[in-house]
Amino acid sequence: MPPRPSDAATNPQEGKILTNPVGSSGRGRSGGHLKLAAAGGVVGPTAFAGAWIVGGLIKKNYSPVEDAISRLAAVGSSTRPLMTCGFVCFGVAVPTYALALRRWIGGPSWMAAFGTGVATLGVAAVPLGMSSTGDRLHGGLATAGYITLTAAPLLAARTLWHARRRTARLSLAIGTGAGLCLAATLLGPHHGLWQRTGLSIGDAWLIGSAVAMLIAPPGGDLGKSGVPSEPMAATTPSDEEVVVNHPVDPQMTDHTRRG
Image 1: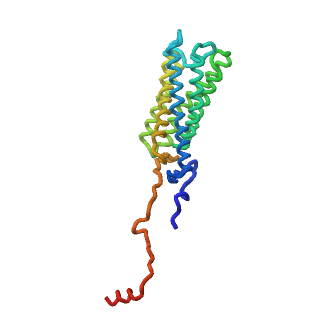
Image 2: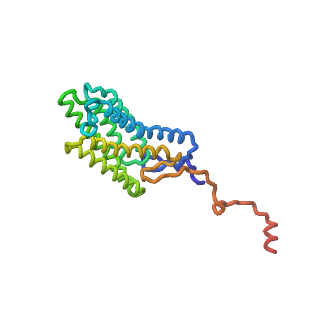
Image 3: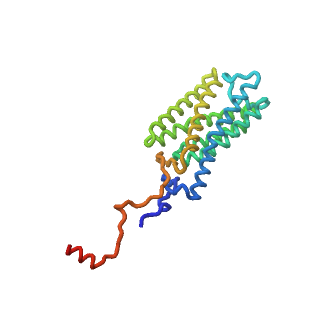
């Protein structure tokens, strides 16, 4: 007796691909939760970018080219509520997206995405202007956010390299570009410009990967092998596979031999 479809389903966290029928109620709920979590990869970066764009436009005596984004959320800043909301939205939504990324491609990339969200929450919790110690802690958390944001596409490239070479190369280029821009913030001039450019490149990868999960067909998950799986369709055995045993009529057999 051939194995049933349910017997072929394996735990995705063990690197296998689900082959349950998409129409099953459990699989449908799982796919819906996955897409809901993936949406965090769009909501978080969009809210964060929107906050620093609007904040940079309305804050007086502030230069988006020279000044860091964190200045918008500094103690006493008129744009602190707006920018803090942007930080918190990113810090909550991106770790949620990271859980979907874990199910989608596996590998360590999801941990980097999760880490950049947590670091951003820390940046919001320790704004500039509290104290000299707080400013140093703020800088450390921001650096951790930079590193993990850059690491997410780089680690994804490693995971996808053998199965999806083109996607892996794009992730590699994005991670490298984001890292170089964020490293350039240490050079001094145009700190705000380099920071915004690097963060935008990294956020674009988060949004792009999230959109890929959202528009994927039901059941078309990427396992840890990086290979898209198709939902199992109802199949019937071919003519060669069907063996039908009919009772044999002795008279018919005898007639056939004489013929």
